[in-house]
Image (cartoon, rainbow, N blue to C red):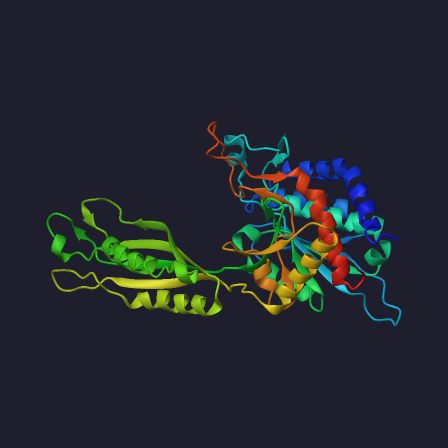
Length: 418
């Protein structure tokens, strides 16, 4: 028997049902699920739970730690115990419900579900509603072509309500629910790359700092020398922090927000800024983190009148560890590489990404791989221009079925059922 025959049947099944999957993507995309629109996020969760119920999944909704956000959605289908009464192997499939687009932005940019050739445009088509649809296709395809594998595995589908703001409670929840699982498979979209699949095996970590400067106000004309200019002091600090960027080591600092002062005829007594640091290497991350905090001791601006010093305070608003290359992730990459070779899909490649995902929470507790979703581009972009210099987020329709087949073949290998 041709060992690839089941995959030929699988592909035919998925191709036949593509209109069903496309309709599901359409229904998801027309729901605005901006992170700070909890009602929309929960509407999407309800639709998702209803569709996965047809595959035998039970749903659980858990309110995110902040009520500014919606409910995380956990979908579970227990597997049949093994012949010696051992628990079924478990696999985690991870996506998120939220997007970065407020409804008013979608309307202002006429950003909606539309098909233009192979491109499917719309909010979340590649980040990450297309990934959720691909999870559904994988499970539906397994149920059809490999029912024994489907029935003998415990499937956990975990959907974060607030991934775009990196809410940490979902990470703790996912680590708990996937304890003992074979792998965490993250369905962020894959980048468009001709004749090659790229899988994410490392991501930067991130820290966010809030810098607050307290100076001393004074009349800018009559008593300028008595003032201690908080904005000038802030400028010195953010310049020093920005200068910590070292591209050769993958370390970046981005000064993202600056505020200060009230009127121009007053020496400003207060100023603040928000800065974000990112790095791939854990050691580089720690070094950069420490050097940034050390700038809280800086004082370069004093009153010319009596030496009154500006005071710099740096607070850590959040800290997310890097996901570096590691043995567990590389073992999964080898599984996907072998599956691609088996199917005649050519080579696959490693990719490190500067952005974070839910994989950052999980890689050190169980083998984790990312970029398993369909191919697309322009994530987080809602604008387009006539000259083509701006384009909106899209996913490639032609990428869904081949990527689902590859992911299924890899999952079967991972479970030892090849």
